[in-house]
Image (cartoon, rainbow, N blue to C red; front, side, top):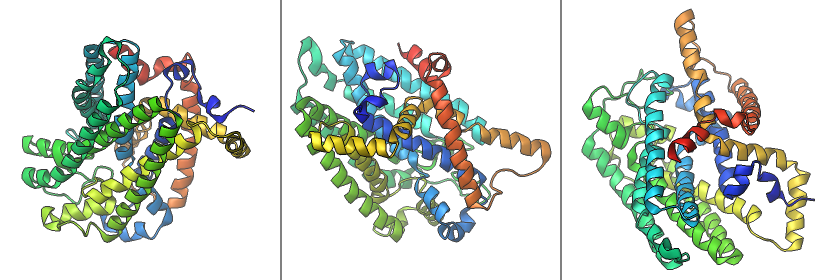
Length: 431
């Protein structure tokens, strides 16, 4: 019987790139919740006036909890970018070329977001996932450039220097978290309009001042504090490189650290979410924005809300890495293999890996139903968005959507299907 790790190398490109299974599995799971959260909150007839009804419904609570998967994507993007740049270095690519590629990638994602978001939301100026990923790609690449100098003249990995670089990213994360409330206070808030549709909830900017507010503090995913997730991911990425170079014992230690600290962060975050941000002075936030953001958990305003999603990702990456990326004793390996195949996890895990491998394409496609419903609403005069109150029915639709996207990902995972992916276009642009 094959080791479960072997079944996840689903394409030649995937095998050659030696991608980490732990990252792909968790990103794939997050893609599932991207699909579900957008579908749920696009159909559910709830808004800021019906929070009590949402809180009493288990389906609403579940999808609300996983509605902030963007933050977990940012953490994974920080890890993946560091690993990608290191991989290029090992292949002998010049440092300047690597930085140019990462900057091109960031610019492409930034432009794609600026073009695509108005199509989805029918509003200009909102800062969403693609824009903040694009900005962060550029920032991380520039900050990491001096670290990559250690590979000049064929030198091997300098673990001490790499750890120091990772620590700088950690301090960068902390600095952003500390600065975020102050930046919000400094740049101010737009006037909240209760009539804004739930799918947007943040205020679409209408002038230059509100544009600045959107980018820095008050849009879907503003620079403050979302870039802290990228810094945390880059920090963990450097630790993964050191552990992989040191061997299985170091990888086990890192995985255990990620799992333990992840649980601690989630507990602290959950406590703060229950308390409604009590440890922090609400005077720093206008009441209406503070209530909306903490109730819907749209933006991680407080350190503890930030820790909840960071902890969830740290635990998941540590757990999947410990199970699938570390060599075990024959006894434990046999147990893992029996459980994996006994539960038929190969099909599910391969779907998650495909979701991860084509995450950008799937992310763009899964939004398509929103502008379609908007056009139908204009044509017929019948409301489609935010009109369904039966959460059980929406949950069934979500499961159907997961299955359909699983088949789509399988189709993309062919020589013909890959030609139509944004990942392939991005690879051409940055090559």
